[in-house]
Length: 309
Image 1 (cartoon, helix red, strand yellow):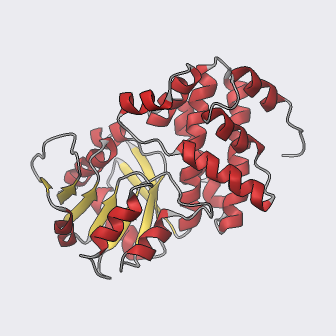
Image 2 (cartoon, rainbow, N blue to C red):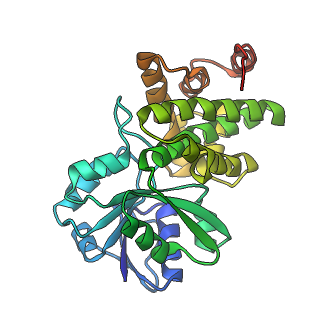
Image 3 (tube, helix red, strand yellow):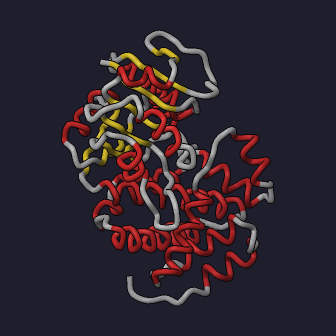
């Protein structure tokens, strides 16, 4: 079985190695691969990925539409497309599975979500994730490609819920890193994380997702891993922002595109337009954009009106 991987960052390589552990061959494309190909992993031209039935997109959301459109010229309805991004597109909060369906001839698409980070995935540490798709054959293909005794891949039909939950965790993980970076304690962190996820759940349900998806591995489970300190790049970015490091410098140091900043802006703007209550997400957007500082964060977080859970 041949599996395609679009991308050359840490998570793309981790996926490639996870696929190799199951015995499948990997066809990989990247503009700037960070490593040399090894046994069972071939670096190929983008059109050559059409030889794979299942193709993972492990690239940032801003570049996915262009790459998917280009690759889509070589694909047909027999291909399965799965993305691993934590981002959304446009002011209407379009998910990337919707993008894949709109710019390629493929209809059997999905999203891989949950507490999957590059180092653990590559090393084979015990863990789990969620493959969200409306098609059982996509669930089965992803399980066959990367699942096993040490990596439990659960399935869900709630694609929008899983994608938006993953996006929410991406921005909240940055907020977790920021709160830790300014020296606040576990109780403050718990308030920020739980109330932030509550806001994102309301908006996710408004977009068509299910409440239970946000309560599961794609939502709270993923956020729990971030709070526990699983080494994802969003945590490091949040701490750097707390230290006053410029975002351009953070990106150069990390070599990764972190989507939580743009997601926070878009979700905050969407909430304002639609009347959804998302004060904590709006605060995150202002923090990431340097509109407010750490002293104001504490004041705003603790001055919010309280009500029932």
